[in-house]
Amino acid sequence: MTILCYHAVDPDWTSPMSVAPEYFAAQCAWLARRRAVVPLSESLSRLDSSGRLPRATAALTFDDGFRSVYDHALPVLSRHGLPATVFLVAQTLTTAGQGVDWVDTPPTYELKTLDMDQVKEMQAAGVSFESHSYSHADLTALSFEDCVRDLRDSRELLETLLGHPVTLLAYPRGRHNESVRAAAQRAGYTHAFTLPEAKEAPGPYAVPRVGLYRGNSLTGLRVKSARPYLTLRTGLPYELLRRGRRATAGVHR
Ligand SMILES: [Zn+2]
Image 1 (tube, rainbow, N blue to C red):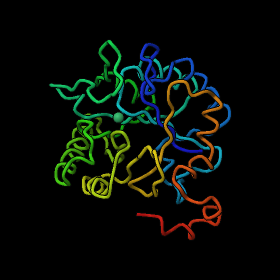
Image 2: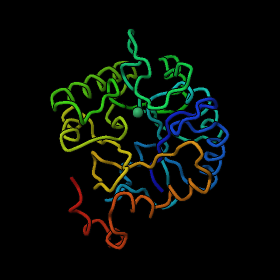
Image 3: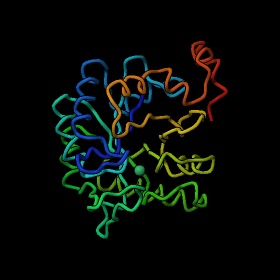
Image 4: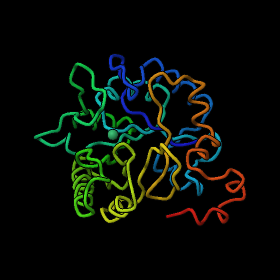
């Protein structure tokens, strides 16, 4: 199994980024029955050299901190006792705030993000929160210094608001390059998560996740969460992986 990535769970937003609540509920019921869903922080020590978790294990993550995760995902997660991690855009939690200006296919109504009361309630229910950058900029378009500043500002603000160290980062849109990975390390993160669209080598600053999108069926979940799927996406030959960590040590960055 692997680390799964959702965005919104919204009945009205018909975007690939928004899984319908009934699909989400069915996927969680299946995961609760068939898989060991572990907290993301716990999963990190169990990743193999290709960024995969042990067989039949999964971790759940949500990018962007959409309000719909509070409205439609939290009740389902709580019902099944499933741990999850939400990656927040720090600026959305400032007094000035930030509207959702980073989605390609917005609905006709305003997309809302979580407020601190909801974050605290979710924390109390066992959901953990980490960083999705400060302003959801394309980090690959920033200079190294600006990238470090954005990621550090996010970490420091979230640590103040959440009251615990923030060490995990999900790159906006999963986009990263060598400079962005170095900036994430410089800004104080221990791991950063991607959404590979093409073959890419995994490492602590490129931990692959598999995105789940609107319309993905239970079969889709099974296929996407299988170990060979991630192997295909990260471009590492399965036979090489089976020979263990030493054989693949060279792929780390
Ligand atoms: Zn995002």
